[in-house]
Length: 121
View 1 (cartoon, rainbow, N blue to C red):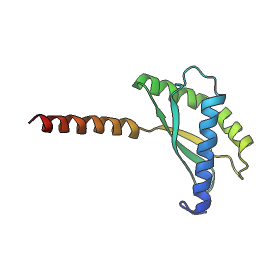
View 2 (cartoon, one colour):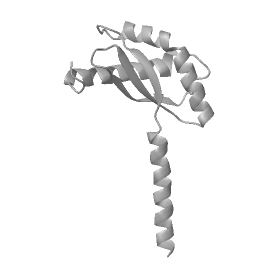
View 3 (cartoon, helix red, strand yellow):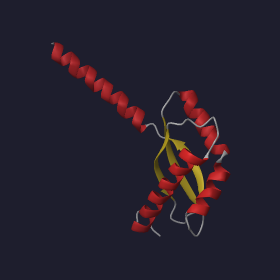
View 4 (tube, one colour):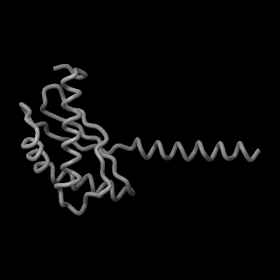
């Protein structure tokens, strides 16, 4: 299976949907921030590994705690994922903090600040 094939894209979307359901509803770890969302998932073509990009609303400590909580619950997440999705192999999940939303908000604030300064002149 190629990386950007239709099958791989569908698997990525399905894993992302199930992963967000598991994180939102089934994990009871207090370290995991309730405002955690799965931004994207990239499953390798051989279905052995997956990168899950996670966005956490909060400060750096909250992000680090959430990442630690997800890494400790990785076995449970993988087992639940295997139960919910029928794949040949259940991928080993690597969680990565996604900074794109924060970066977008920061850039939006800078743009607003510049346009405000231009209107004052």
